[in-house]
Image (tube, rainbow, N blue to C red; front, top):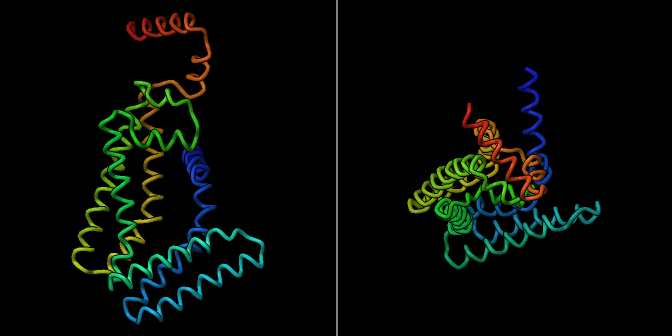
Length: 238
C-alpha cells in the first residue's frame, strides 16, 4: 500500500506542471471548439460571433483580475485562423488540419530519432529536466527511452491514421470528438504509461542513476577508468 501511495505521489509531481496549465488551455481552446461545433449546424457568421464573444469574455475577465492575457489572446488568434480557413475552404473539418499536421510531425520525429539511435523521449526528458545529455545514451539507460519512444510511435501513428480516416470520410463532427478525446485525456494517459514503464525499465536495466553518473563524470579520467574496470570484473564474476 505504501509503495502504491509513493508511486501515485511521484506521478502527481510529474504532472503538476501539466495540471497548472490545463485551465489556460481551456481558455485558449474553448472559443475554437465552440466555433467548430456551431459551424456544423449554423451559419458561419453566427458561429464566429458566439465564439468571439466567449473569447472576449475570457479576455475581459483576465484583464479585470490582473491575470495573464496570453491564453485568451492565443484563443482569439486560433479562432481567427480557424474562421479564415473555413471561409476559404467552406468546410469546418479543414480547421483541424493543423492538429493532424502536428501529430504527423511528432510521429516523424519519433521515427527519425529511432533510426538515429537517439530516442525522441530522451530529448523531451533532457529539455524538461536538464539531466546530463550523455547519461541518456548510456547503454543501460538508452534502451528504456528507446522502448518508450516506440510506444509513442504506436500511439501517434494510430491517432494519425484514425484522424486521416475520419477526415477523408467527411465525418467532421466525429473528427472533432475524436481530436478532443485523443488530445489531453489520452496524452496524459500516454505520459503516465511512459513514466511507469520507463522507471520500471530503468530499474531492471540496472544503469547508473543521474546523481551517480554525474559524480563519476566529475572524477579524474584515470580514477574513472579504475572504477569502471573494477565494476566490469565484478559483473563478470557474478
